[in-house]
Amino acid sequence: MEAPPSYENQREDMVSRQIQARGIQDQRVLQAMRQVPRHLFVPPEHRQDAYRDHPVSIGFGQTISQPYIVALMTQLLHLTGTETVLEIGTGSGYQAAVLAHIARQVHTIEFIPDLANNARQVLATLGLDNVTVHTGDGSVGLSQFTPYQGIIVTAAAPQVPAPLLGQLADNGRLVAPTGGRYSQSLSVWWPSDQGFDHEVITPVSFVQLRGSWGWQKDQL
Image (cartoon, rainbow, N blue to C red; front, side):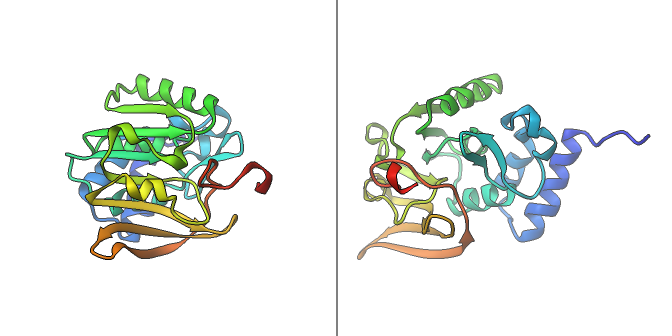
């Protein structure tokens, strides 16, 4: 009987077939995707799906995003390694782990305490000490570490939360999905003389952002 492929082989196949083949060219992003063991961020019962080309359930009605979307959103931040980055929606912690290989410091906020605790444990196991997991309402941001050169929102809101735009550095970029409850557009935002400019990148479907500037409990 043929042995199942190793996680290392699955990870390399994920990068070459799902990510590079779709146009992701940032070498630092590709290397981070090769290094981070995605299967450790997936519940054991779904681990066989960790490197497949789709989101995977992590419980609590949440998912770990499709690998390509993680790579795309990371590339859109244009990170060089000197930045402080804010992530809204820690989830499994996988996106934060990828960012940790590229940015100087990552702050990530999770609304669900159990998910935040799980992410802290996996990130600590991997020795990623430049990531801090916070629990709370990510839609209002995290003012004590501003400004951020990159902000990434991994859950969808009707529009970009105004507090997040206010916490973005003058040369920063914010990547977020916005739109309806079940389908959205992924866009990148940056400061301009007129306030903020943005570019729509691609249609997406994310879980809903909870909090003051996201979807309210009675809307879910």
